[in-house]
Amino acid sequence: LLDFPVKYEESMNTVVTQELSRFNRLTACIKASLKEIMRAIAGLVVLGPELKAMGDSMVIGQVPTMWSDVAYPSLKPLGGWVNDLLLRLDFLQSWVDNMKAPNVFWISGFFFTQAFITGTKQNYARKYQYPIDEVEYDHSVLRPPEMEAARAEGAADGSVVSGLFLDSARFDVERHVIAEANPRELFVAMPYFHLLPRHMKDIEPIEGKPELYTGENGGTAHVYMCPLYKTSVRFGRLSTTGHSTNYVMSLRIPMEPEHQQKHWIKRGVAMLTQLDD
Image 1 (spheres, rainbow, N blue to C red):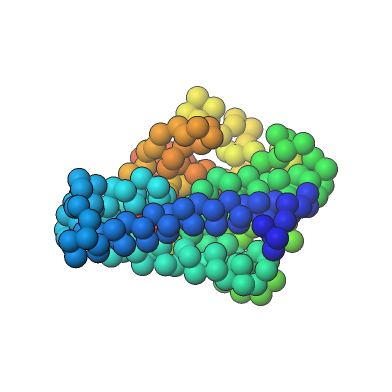
Image 2 (image 1 turned 90 degrees about the horizontal axis):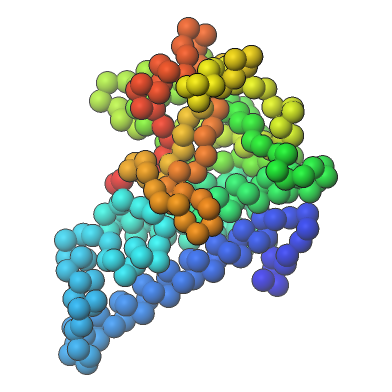
């Protein structure tokens, strides 16, 4: 808290301290339970139902329920889950060590992704003195030179994020559009996205039909509004914060001129922050 104090102009300080608190709770649970099961194996304590269930889960490569109950949504087996947790902790550790937010945010590494999204929007609203309920996101997929610039300098406004995967389609980097998936290719890593908050009146309306929830009749932005989920299950529950436990947001992906949004909707195209392995 002393290294990242609450500041009006930097909401990311609040985001990172909340993330650290959540991960500290998770790692404390893991450490305590592992210590207890080692004592139970040594015969120093009784092997109760919770510890037995934990041991059984670890034997078959599943994440113990007592860990997943205090963790983020994930469908990974135990080995992949542990590796993913270590990567998330490294992401936060580098943030803390550098004493500033990274130039490119690994969006998959957040425990509560919506807090990061709200923090980015709040920074923009406070910087330009806009009411936050009049600010929405515009999105752009970065080209390779723009990705290099983002790694070196970051973004003046908004946030550049990495770590997204496209499900049931691919992104053609040369043509800079969403394209049909290659044979036997289920998931494709996406280029960086620039999440740019803007005043609602400055965002180009999306081409589509209101009755199909794909856009506006007078819209001019020829993009696919691709839903983003934390896991491949693609559904969640409404949490006490008012956010879904799985759905994150929808992002604009450029399309070929001959395609409409329904082309990709019928294919069930979505993005994920993590895979199942």
